[in-house]
Amino acid sequence: MHSINFSMLPAYLSRAAWPAILLALSGCAVGPDFAVPKPIVHDGVFDKAATTLPSTTTDATFDPAWWQQFDDATLVALETEAIAANLDLQAAAARLEQGRAALQISGAALLPRVDASASRLRSRNSENGPLAALGAPTTPTDLSQYGFDASWEIDLWGRVRRAREAAAAQADVALYDAQAMRVSLTAEVARTYLELRGVQSDLHIARASIDIAHKSLHVAERRHQQGVATQFDTSISAAQVATFEAAIPALEQRRAALTNALALLLAQPPHALDARLAASDKDAVPALPAQVPVGLPSQLAHRRPDILRAEAQLHAATASIGVAKAAFYPSVSLTGSFGMQAFRTADVGDWGSRQFSIGPVLHLPIFEGGRLKGNLALTEARQQEAAIAYQRTVLGAWHEVDNALSAYRTTQQRAERLDVAVTSNRQALASADRRYGQGAADYLNVLVTQQRLLDSENAASRSRTDMALAMVALYKALGGGWDAAAAAQ
Image (cartoon, rainbow, N blue to C red; front, side, top):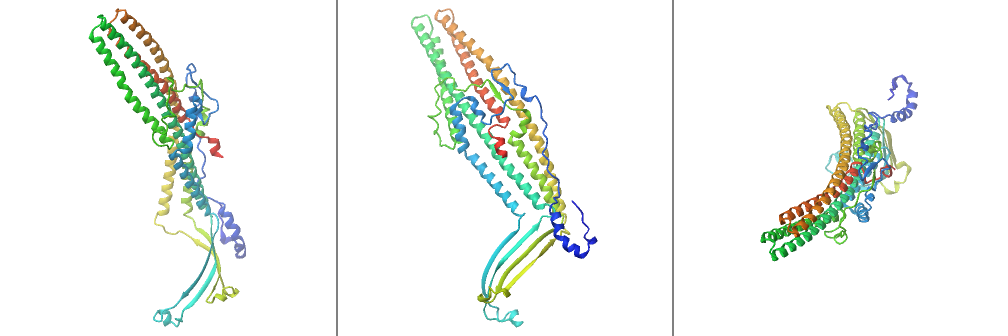
């Protein structure tokens, strides 16, 4: 900021230079200028997914509509409907409009304010009042007047501009809040849908296991009738059937809860999606794509709305320091008014009825009791907190991505081994059934093998669901579900 010594200017030059001096000063803005932080880029983080797995990551262009990679038309339709109808997302959009309106309000302070007024008043002084004692007339009089008032604060130290800068940053905070809500929504829709498909797969496995148990019960009953088996075999076989059947109600309740959860995300009443989400395919969980594009590590800070939100909060806090510093300096406002005033209505339009006032108003803070210093210290401390919060957000983002990549890798590795276990247990059950039918083994061996097969099939089904959920978590960690380029326009 430039310093000008007015005492060194001649009087006539000072009068002529005042407008230019005020305009020059109005270009100043106290307080620090915001600089976008440079987050640390951890090169190679996205390369941790093993390339030998069925589904691997690639640095290809990140697709905000990542759920399309599941190649599931129902999931794509649910995501589209949720984005259009979800109530939480609509509330976030309303908060975004509030932020933009606040920005418009703050920007209005940079422009002159002009008001118009008109009135016609009839008044009378008291005959027993002080004005009558001074000789003022007490007869009723009319007073008509109209005119304009104008005022404009010259933003000498950038207080208004810094306030508008902070408001713009707060509007960005609301924008990134809305985008974060969209990321969470799309991830939650995908997660709930995949969980539902997993439960439907579990139901199919449970019913298939019941069918196998019924066949074993039939064999045990026939052998008991033939006298080659005991009542123990039929009793324990019937208990196995009842145990398998007992798992069905809990799975059906879980299926209903997940279906209703999806309906809520789409702002639909309970059971509105029941018929639509009924599945008959035993492989209900969508398979992972062979390659999952995750983009480049350097793009993460521009994709995750929580990082951008923390950056906008830091920007707002930085601009607020300029507002607090500007309060220490004098403020100058130009005010003026012009209007017509007359006792008789007929004289209101007469040029002699005009009245006006114009001139600068100077406000200079002299003693504030430490309020200004305290306010500046408060804004500076808030800016430091915002800077720390930004660093914490960036660091947390990298940890979240790393954990998601690790989960994406390990769930696939676990699924491969569980598929081997299912194949082996099926072979073991076929052998146990054959040996029991031949009388070469007792029925307890069949029951144990049946239970092992059911456990391994349930674990394999859960692992397929976990793989899909790991992909959802990965894309959520990468900031998926919104178009950063479109939001920046």
